[in-house]
Length: 336
Image 1 (cartoon, rainbow, N blue to C red):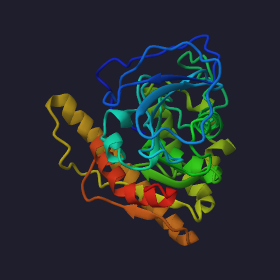
Image 2 (cartoon, helix red, strand yellow; image 1 turned 180 degrees about the vertical axis):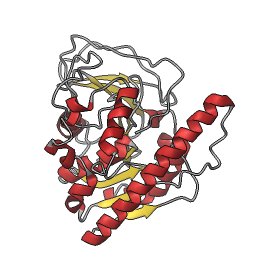
Image 3 (tube, rainbow, N blue to C red; image 1 turned 135 degrees about the horizontal axis):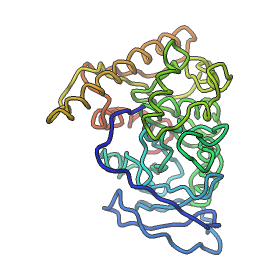
Image 4 (spheres, rainbow, N blue to C red; image 1 turned 60 degrees about the horizontal axis):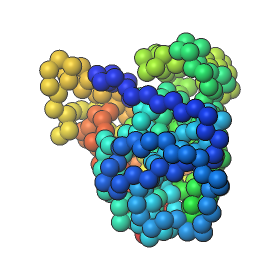
């Protein structure tokens, strides 16, 4: 959950009346975050048996939520492996932050794995909600688990990406979601990674903290997501509870100390406030990740953990963790 307030106005997108399963919007290879104009629906999505060899595209994939934008960097040599990169709590509607806050695309530019970066999903936890949020006028019900495990893999399969040779990695909100999706869809994911994730959502105070955070990030009502605090949906989405389901999965899990490091150079009062906020969020993520490490150890479940001595809840530290995880990702997906 990345709660740091944004100072610039968020860009919003509304797409109406699109019936095609996916609309492909090519983008120049060097323009990671740009949004192309909506193209006319294609008569049919062409099926290929091999993914494009390299290149970058932005596509719209149909879902129960309407067309969802997805940024895709294709595997360098047309391989069938894919790595899904999930955003944080304040996910934007124009681009996945992995594409512009980090050098993720450069890190994997020469590797035989496709980067899949879904766009949107602010405060969603990438899960299927019970109902639209009733506090902010949301007009659709979030169905992100369905999208990421059914609609999107269906589309990617038409472009040569395997349904079963995938990894998933996320930060903060996306970190706990990555483990959740991998735990319940083991036929799809061979690797999962949580960076600064909140991995014990049933811990005292966590449900209240999530409620406050989601109100701050778009005025979303957590009761529309998982119901009241006693709802079983809370337990289903708590990594601490479903930890036994992760046995045998290749995992990379990290959280830093919360102490400022080389990427923390606050400017002015706003910068100081944001850094202090990022310190607190990372300290909480560290406590939860340490508890999760103990939980896995008691279960005999193997995972690779990394706890940097310095680092806050910030993108450049997650960029570094992605680089550390890269060899394990490529090995798990046989994507060299």
